[in-house]
Amino acid sequence: MTPTPIVRLRGVSKVYGSYTAIDTIDLDILNGEFITFLGPSGSGKTTTLMMLAGFESPTDGSIEMDGKRIEKLPAHKRNIGVVFQNYALFPHMTVRENLAFPLKVRGMARAEMARRVDAALAVVHLETMGHRRPVQLSGGQQQRVALARAMIFKPRLIVLDEPLGALDKNLREHLQSELKTLHRELGTTMVFVTHDQSEALTLSDRVVVFNKGKIEQIGTPEELYKRPATPFVASFIGENNGLVGTVVGHERGHAVVRFADGGTLFAPQQTGCSVGAGVTFNLRPESIRLAGPKPLPGTQQAAARVVDTVYLGDQNRVVLEATGIGRLVLKANAEDATAVAPGDSVTIEMPVSACRLLACA
Image (cartoon, rainbow, N blue to C red; front, side):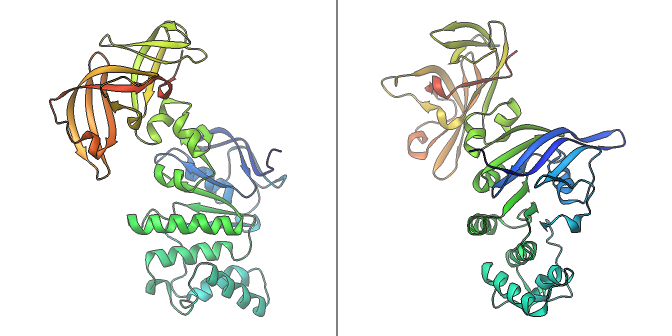
């Protein structure tokens, strides 16, 4: 059975004067999922989140929650919890008072408020911090308080606008794990905004990739990484080798792609990739390897010159100039790549099945 959408956006646009921030998007958000809006600055992800939360109104289109139109409903009546990038905690209130605030404005009885505050503090592991003010908390602790405040009134949906962006790498990764666990335990639908590809892949059930006000692709992290639908997605999700070429023939179900310098490579044939079509030939760096004594089945080889090597701890990043093909990046186990140095001539091996053609004309 297809999961039931909790939210539907249909034909939603947002225009500021002559600038189109969001250009006619359609999107379903499924009940209980962790969905991430991912894209560079100015791509439209935060604007979409703000329209969903009620802090912006769409110029055109409709937004439904549980089958009811909400695009004209005030933010405080949408039953949506919000976590902002700067957390927006009240500095003059204690943690307990911050958590009680959304319950107080809803007229909840004092005893029930106290019970819910205790429960929320326990969920985010801040039971002993209730008397402190935000300035007395670390960045990670403030983030937990903001999340607890967003979920304390049991909203239908929680939206999070880059809540981990200001934290250092180690703390950010720790809180990613905590947030993922919390979502699994609560089962509340969460909509998360980030420009960090790694964060999106780590946290999400599905990812919505935004670019220039449009949705480029929606899919699971694995789908986006292994089967990007556009050159933008291929380049934005992880590191990718994208080479411009032309389809010059077909052999045994594979397209033959020729590059500007005269070299050719094979890729699985895809619909629309007829002879003469301009394509982007995509291959992930980890799919390329330094060739061994015997070619592996299903691979193709090319001669290359090592341009640069970068030590990454568990991996080496090797920049290559492949003869007749162009600049490629290879990522290999550090032990496998330590023998090469700039200027070396090598042979590289690429599985044909790992190659992907995009932007077929």
